[in-house]
Image 1 (cartoon, rainbow, N blue to C red):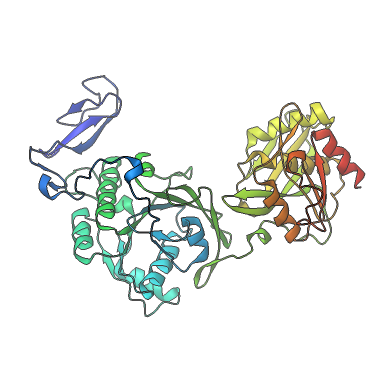
Image 2 (image 1 turned 135 degrees about the vertical axis):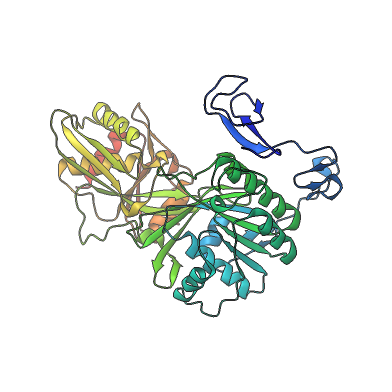
Length: 461
């Protein structure tokens, strides 16, 4: 039975009930009641009294009169992590980081908080999933035997908040938010109500004290953060770990960042001493072929502010009455659309062929600028002829067969020229001016339609 200070709120109509019921008494919807704290008595709330609230009431001012100041950042010393964060940890910021079990979340955060502790910042590592001895064992495994990071094995929210207010750390790691519970609710740790309530308290503490709080979140089997979606709206930055746990490489992607660019990625290599940043990530996503092979085309994708060269591989083989279309790291529905455009406007038919497309290195490409490279890789595999050595392509392809420009095309071409590529097929709108000498050594073929791109490729055979 729920405590007197708990009520149950319907997620559909907002109706309330003093006890949990299978059906909402207001709208008759099933399984929509979740536990929440009851409204406090007049003069006080569950965050403290009105006169001693965590955040004092602010004065209402026009935007023009508010001083716009840059946020103070604290670099972690891990360049790839600082890149994703936008330059470092922000005072009073709340960061949510999620990823598959064992992918390296706790390892990276322990490395980062140890570096901040050594730089003179007051830190705190709150562990709810491991004991202090287990964290110490990981620290020694990472080559940090003399680490001075304070560790608090605790899952009760009230005790964690008391420690934060008494120690005033510059940064606190909560590993993980799904293990923390509040005495004000009767539901189990990890439930929607507990996760939302605990995250709200921790966020208010961060904003009122200036402590940077990093929350580690569990993920579902689909790879999304577990718990209420509102958790991502509460925090300032949302980071996702990507990559295969069987591979040595890990990617961290910023899905949301109020203090920096979104979709920025950091690339790490898992070693015996923890995660190490990769300075030239393009090398990961390019297969090392001695000579060009059929079905391979390199494209330049844009991840945040960083251009990356990724190899797109395609395999076209004889299929049965129901040919398969499978893509890894690319949108499967878009692959079906590109095959239709390829048939209609370029005369390349694959209706009786199995088509498999893969982005090398486990990277996920969501931007449409990969269209041209995918279509050229499929054509190369179907013809059994490799594209010329040092060949790259990028551009969005529309249903009418037009090749549309990609954002920041000049930066993509500069990255390709820097890495020694010789031939580029790009949208005409992305082609540089004739007197631009930034792309010396790179022959650029601007095209407006997919048919022109196919003619260029055949002319290079």
